[in-house]
Length: 284
DNA sequence: ATCCAGGGGGATT
DNA sequence: AATCCCCATGGA
Image: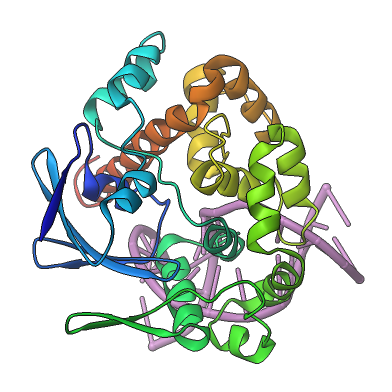
Protein backbone atom coordinates (compact mmCIF):
# COMPACT_ATOMS: atom_id res chain seq x y z
CA UNK A 1 0.00 0.00 0.00
CA UNK A 2 1.28 3.49 -0.88
CA UNK A 3 1.41 6.43 1.51
CA UNK A 4 1.55 10.22 1.23
CA UNK A 5 2.08 13.11 3.60
CA UNK A 6 -1.16 14.57 4.93
CA UNK A 7 -0.35 17.12 7.63
CA UNK A 8 -3.25 18.92 9.30
CA UNK A 9 -5.71 16.44 7.90
CA UNK A 10 -8.37 14.45 9.75
CA UNK A 11 -9.80 11.84 7.42
CA UNK A 12 -12.70 10.68 9.57
CA UNK A 13 -13.75 14.22 10.46
CA UNK A 14 -13.66 15.32 6.84
CA UNK A 15 -15.62 12.33 5.52
CA UNK A 16 -18.13 12.67 8.33
CA UNK A 17 -18.83 16.38 7.94
CA UNK A 18 -21.81 16.18 5.58
CA UNK A 19 -19.91 17.00 2.40
CA UNK A 20 -19.62 13.48 0.98
CA UNK A 21 -21.91 10.49 1.27
CA UNK A 22 -20.39 7.54 -0.58
CA UNK A 23 -17.94 6.02 1.87
CA UNK A 24 -17.97 3.22 4.38
CA UNK A 25 -15.64 2.08 7.16
CA UNK A 26 -13.33 -0.76 6.12
CA UNK A 27 -10.43 -2.30 8.06
CA UNK A 28 -8.69 0.64 9.75
CA UNK A 29 -9.87 3.18 7.20
CA UNK A 30 -12.58 3.78 4.62
CA UNK A 31 -13.69 2.64 1.20
CA UNK A 32 -14.58 5.76 -0.76
CA UNK A 33 -16.45 6.24 -4.04
CA UNK A 34 -15.76 9.35 -6.10
CA UNK A 35 -17.41 9.35 -9.53
CA UNK A 36 -15.84 6.36 -11.30
CA UNK A 37 -13.19 5.77 -8.61
CA UNK A 38 -13.46 3.28 -5.76
CA UNK A 39 -10.52 3.31 -3.38
CA UNK A 40 -9.32 2.56 0.13
CA UNK A 41 -7.78 5.20 2.37
CA UNK A 42 -6.54 5.01 5.93
CA UNK A 43 -5.02 7.60 8.24
CA UNK A 44 -1.67 6.85 9.88
CA UNK A 45 -1.06 9.92 12.02
CA UNK A 46 0.32 12.51 9.57
CA UNK A 47 0.18 10.23 6.54
CA UNK A 48 -2.45 8.55 4.42
CA UNK A 49 -2.14 4.96 3.29
CA UNK A 50 -4.20 4.20 0.20
CA UNK A 51 -5.00 1.65 -2.46
CA UNK A 52 -6.79 1.80 -5.79
CA UNK A 53 -6.15 5.47 -6.55
CA UNK A 54 -3.34 7.85 -7.53
CA UNK A 55 -1.74 10.05 -4.89
CA UNK A 56 -2.30 13.11 -7.13
CA UNK A 57 -6.01 12.42 -6.99
CA UNK A 58 -6.04 12.27 -3.19
CA UNK A 59 -4.17 15.57 -2.96
CA UNK A 60 -6.75 17.22 -5.18
CA UNK A 61 -9.77 15.46 -3.68
CA UNK A 62 -8.94 16.26 -0.05
CA UNK A 63 -7.37 19.61 -0.94
CA UNK A 64 -4.14 18.59 0.76
CA UNK A 65 -2.41 21.39 -1.17
CA UNK A 66 -4.33 24.01 0.82
CA UNK A 67 -2.23 25.65 3.52
CA UNK A 68 -4.41 24.60 6.45
CA UNK A 69 -2.30 26.27 9.13
CA UNK A 70 -2.33 29.60 7.30
CA UNK A 71 -6.09 29.35 6.84
CA UNK A 72 -6.63 28.73 10.56
CA UNK A 73 -4.37 31.70 11.39
CA UNK A 74 -6.36 33.91 9.03
CA UNK A 75 -9.57 33.01 10.88
CA UNK A 76 -8.16 33.93 14.29
CA UNK A 77 -9.97 37.28 14.30
CA UNK A 78 -13.22 35.39 14.93
CA UNK A 79 -13.17 33.74 18.39
CA UNK A 80 -16.01 31.28 17.74
CA UNK A 81 -14.70 30.08 14.37
CA UNK A 82 -11.16 30.07 15.65
CA UNK A 83 -12.05 27.97 18.67
CA UNK A 84 -13.93 25.47 16.47
CA UNK A 85 -11.00 25.44 14.04
CA UNK A 86 -8.67 24.47 16.87
CA UNK A 87 -10.96 21.75 18.16
CA UNK A 88 -11.71 20.36 14.73
CA UNK A 89 -8.30 20.93 13.19
CA UNK A 90 -7.81 18.85 10.09
CA UNK A 91 -11.34 19.23 8.77
CA UNK A 92 -10.91 20.01 5.08
CA UNK A 93 -13.20 21.10 2.29
CA UNK A 94 -13.26 18.32 -0.30
CA UNK A 95 -13.01 18.88 -4.04
CA UNK A 96 -15.63 16.53 -5.43
CA UNK A 97 -16.65 15.76 -8.96
CA UNK A 98 -19.09 18.58 -9.87
CA UNK A 99 -21.69 16.34 -11.52
CA UNK A 100 -21.78 13.86 -8.65
CA UNK A 101 -21.94 16.79 -6.23
CA UNK A 102 -24.81 18.38 -8.16
CA UNK A 103 -26.87 15.18 -8.13
CA UNK A 104 -26.08 14.54 -4.46
CA UNK A 105 -27.16 17.98 -3.31
CA UNK A 106 -30.32 17.96 -5.42
CA UNK A 107 -31.16 14.85 -3.37
CA UNK A 108 -30.25 16.73 -0.19
CA UNK A 109 -33.03 19.31 -0.29
CA UNK A 110 -35.42 18.93 2.64
CA UNK A 111 -33.73 15.67 3.53
CA UNK A 112 -31.16 14.30 5.97
CA UNK A 113 -27.83 12.57 5.83
CA UNK A 114 -28.90 8.89 6.16
CA UNK A 115 -31.53 9.34 3.47
CA UNK A 116 -29.16 11.18 1.09
CA UNK A 117 -26.69 8.32 1.48
CA UNK A 118 -29.37 5.82 0.64
CA UNK A 119 -30.48 7.87 -2.41
CA UNK A 120 -27.01 8.23 -3.97
CA UNK A 121 -26.08 4.60 -3.28
CA UNK A 122 -29.30 3.48 -4.88
CA UNK A 123 -28.75 5.77 -7.91
CA UNK A 124 -25.22 4.42 -8.35
CA UNK A 125 -26.43 0.83 -8.02
CA UNK A 126 -29.19 1.18 -10.61
CA UNK A 127 -27.46 3.47 -13.16
CA UNK A 128 -23.72 2.95 -12.60
CA UNK A 129 -21.22 0.37 -13.85
CA UNK A 130 -19.84 -2.13 -11.35
CA UNK A 131 -16.40 -1.46 -9.93
CA UNK A 132 -14.21 -3.50 -7.61
CA UNK A 133 -11.20 -3.16 -5.38
CA UNK A 134 -9.81 -6.58 -4.52
CA UNK A 135 -12.73 -8.50 -3.10
CA UNK A 136 -14.78 -5.37 -2.43
CA UNK A 137 -17.51 -4.42 -4.87
CA UNK A 138 -19.31 -1.20 -5.57
CA UNK A 139 -20.79 0.91 -8.38
CA UNK A 140 -19.38 3.89 -10.24
CA UNK A 141 -21.42 7.05 -10.17
CA UNK A 142 -23.35 7.38 -13.47
CA UNK A 143 -22.17 10.06 -15.92
CA UNK A 144 -24.28 13.02 -17.11
CA UNK A 145 -26.88 11.83 -19.60
CA UNK A 146 -27.33 8.47 -17.90
CA UNK A 147 -30.03 9.45 -15.37
CA UNK A 148 -32.77 9.15 -17.98
CA UNK A 149 -35.25 6.82 -16.30
CA UNK A 150 -37.80 8.37 -13.96
CA UNK A 151 -39.01 4.97 -12.79
CA UNK A 152 -35.54 3.97 -11.65
CA UNK A 153 -35.07 7.34 -9.95
CA UNK A 154 -38.38 6.88 -8.12
CA UNK A 155 -37.21 3.42 -7.09
CA UNK A 156 -34.18 5.14 -5.53
CA UNK A 157 -36.73 6.89 -3.27
CA UNK A 158 -35.79 10.40 -4.33
CA UNK A 159 -39.50 11.26 -4.45
CA UNK A 160 -40.40 14.64 -5.91
CA UNK A 161 -36.72 15.29 -6.69
CA UNK A 162 -36.89 12.79 -9.59
CA UNK A 163 -38.00 15.47 -12.03
CA UNK A 164 -35.18 17.78 -10.90
CA UNK A 165 -32.65 15.03 -11.51
CA UNK A 166 -34.09 14.40 -14.98
CA UNK A 167 -33.75 18.12 -15.77
CA UNK A 168 -30.18 18.27 -14.46
CA UNK A 169 -29.39 15.20 -16.53
CA UNK A 170 -30.72 16.98 -19.63
CA UNK A 171 -29.15 20.36 -19.03
CA UNK A 172 -25.86 19.83 -17.17
CA UNK A 173 -22.76 18.04 -18.38
CA UNK A 174 -19.12 17.94 -17.30
CA UNK A 175 -17.96 20.71 -19.65
CA UNK A 176 -20.73 23.09 -18.62
CA UNK A 177 -20.06 22.50 -14.93
CA UNK A 178 -16.29 22.92 -15.35
CA UNK A 179 -16.92 26.17 -17.19
CA UNK A 180 -18.55 27.63 -14.08
CA UNK A 181 -15.18 27.65 -12.31
CA UNK A 182 -13.98 30.72 -14.15
CA UNK A 183 -17.07 32.84 -13.43
CA UNK A 184 -17.69 35.32 -10.64
CA UNK A 185 -19.44 33.49 -7.81
CA UNK A 186 -22.73 35.32 -8.36
CA UNK A 187 -22.83 34.27 -12.02
CA UNK A 188 -21.94 30.67 -11.23
CA UNK A 189 -24.61 30.55 -8.52
CA UNK A 190 -27.22 32.01 -10.88
CA UNK A 191 -26.32 29.46 -13.55
CA UNK A 192 -26.88 26.59 -11.10
CA UNK A 193 -30.08 28.13 -9.76
CA UNK A 194 -31.49 28.23 -13.29
CA UNK A 195 -31.89 24.45 -12.89
CA UNK A 196 -35.10 23.35 -11.16
CA UNK A 197 -34.62 21.96 -7.67
CA UNK A 198 -31.63 24.17 -7.01
CA UNK A 199 -31.98 27.24 -4.83
CA UNK A 200 -29.30 29.16 -2.93
CA UNK A 201 -28.34 26.54 -0.39
CA UNK A 202 -27.90 23.67 -2.83
CA UNK A 203 -26.09 25.93 -5.33
CA UNK A 204 -23.66 27.06 -2.64
CA UNK A 205 -22.91 23.46 -1.66
CA UNK A 206 -22.02 22.62 -5.28
CA UNK A 207 -19.89 25.77 -5.57
CA UNK A 208 -18.01 25.06 -2.35
CA UNK A 209 -17.62 21.29 -2.42
CA UNK A 210 -16.82 20.83 -6.12
CA UNK A 211 -16.06 24.06 -8.00
CA UNK A 212 -13.37 25.71 -5.86
CA UNK A 213 -15.52 28.61 -4.67
CA UNK A 214 -14.11 28.68 -1.15
CA UNK A 215 -15.96 31.97 -0.66
CA UNK A 216 -19.34 30.17 -0.85
CA UNK A 217 -21.24 29.87 2.44
CA UNK A 218 -24.16 27.41 2.28
CA UNK A 219 -26.79 28.39 4.85
CA UNK A 220 -28.56 25.32 6.16
CA UNK A 221 -30.63 25.12 9.30
CA UNK A 222 -27.58 24.50 11.55
CA UNK A 223 -25.57 27.39 10.16
CA UNK A 224 -28.61 29.64 10.25
CA UNK A 225 -29.19 28.83 13.90
CA UNK A 226 -25.63 29.30 15.14
CA UNK A 227 -25.03 32.51 13.17
CA UNK A 228 -28.27 34.09 14.36
CA UNK A 229 -27.53 33.17 17.94
CA UNK A 230 -23.86 34.05 18.03
CA UNK A 231 -23.64 37.07 15.73
CA UNK A 232 -27.14 38.59 15.55
CA UNK A 233 -28.14 38.49 19.24
CA UNK A 234 -30.68 35.78 18.43
CA UNK A 235 -32.61 38.10 16.11
CA UNK A 236 -34.15 36.49 13.05
CA UNK A 237 -32.21 37.12 9.84
CA UNK A 238 -32.95 35.72 6.39
CA UNK A 239 -30.65 33.04 4.95
CA UNK A 240 -29.69 35.45 2.15
CA UNK A 241 -28.54 38.03 4.68
CA UNK A 242 -26.57 35.41 6.59
CA UNK A 243 -24.84 34.49 3.34
CA UNK A 244 -23.99 38.12 2.53
CA UNK A 245 -22.80 38.71 6.09
CA UNK A 246 -20.45 35.72 5.86
CA UNK A 247 -19.08 36.77 2.48
CA UNK A 248 -18.17 40.20 3.89
CA UNK A 249 -16.80 38.84 7.15
CA UNK A 250 -14.79 35.86 5.93
CA UNK A 251 -14.16 36.61 2.24
CA UNK A 252 -12.36 33.78 0.46
CA UNK A 253 -12.32 31.75 3.70
CA UNK A 254 -16.11 31.78 4.12
CA UNK A 255 -16.36 28.14 3.09
CA UNK A 256 -13.86 27.06 5.70
CA UNK A 257 -15.54 29.21 8.33
CA UNK A 258 -18.82 27.53 7.43
CA UNK A 259 -17.35 24.03 7.77
CA UNK A 260 -16.15 24.77 11.31
CA UNK A 261 -19.37 26.53 12.33
CA UNK A 262 -21.39 23.66 10.90
CA UNK A 263 -19.77 20.98 12.98
CA UNK A 264 -19.75 23.23 16.02
CA UNK A 265 -23.51 23.74 15.59
CA UNK A 266 -24.10 20.04 15.01
CA UNK A 267 -22.21 19.17 18.17
CA UNK A 268 -24.15 21.71 20.20
CA UNK A 269 -27.38 20.36 18.76
CA UNK A 270 -26.61 16.79 19.75
CA UNK A 271 -25.48 17.95 23.20
CA UNK A 272 -28.74 19.86 23.63
CA UNK A 273 -30.74 16.80 22.63
CA UNK A 274 -28.84 14.60 25.08
CA UNK A 275 -29.32 17.17 27.84
CA UNK A 276 -33.06 17.46 27.27
CA UNK A 277 -33.48 13.68 27.10
CA UNK A 278 -31.64 13.38 30.40
CA UNK A 279 -33.62 16.27 31.90
CA UNK A 280 -36.90 14.57 31.01
CA UNK A 281 -36.11 11.55 33.18
CA UNK A 282 -34.36 13.46 35.97
CA UNK A 283 -35.77 16.21 38.16
CA UNK A 284 -34.89 18.87 35.61
C1' DA B 1 -49.28 32.86 3.34
C1' DT B 2 -49.96 28.03 3.71
C1' DC B 3 -49.86 23.44 2.18
C1' DC B 4 -48.01 19.67 -0.09
C1' DA B 5 -44.95 16.59 -3.11
C1' DG B 6 -41.98 11.77 -0.92
C1' DG B 7 -39.52 9.53 2.71
C1' DG B 8 -36.31 7.81 6.39
C1' DG B 9 -34.91 8.47 11.07
C1' DG B 10 -35.15 9.98 15.67
C1' DA B 11 -37.84 11.59 19.52
C1' DT B 12 -42.01 11.59 21.74
C1' DT B 13 -46.42 9.98 23.25
C1' DA C 1 -47.13 1.12 17.93
C1' DA C 2 -48.81 5.31 16.32
C1' DT C 3 -47.55 10.05 15.72
C1' DC C 4 -45.07 14.30 15.55
C1' DC C 5 -40.89 16.85 13.82
C1' DC C 6 -36.90 17.49 10.91
C1' DC C 7 -35.13 18.76 6.28
C1' DA C 8 -35.06 24.00 3.04
C1' DT C 9 -37.21 23.33 -3.33
C1' DG C 10 -40.99 24.63 -6.07
C1' DG C 11 -45.73 24.82 -7.48
C1' DA C 12 -50.62 25.26 -6.37
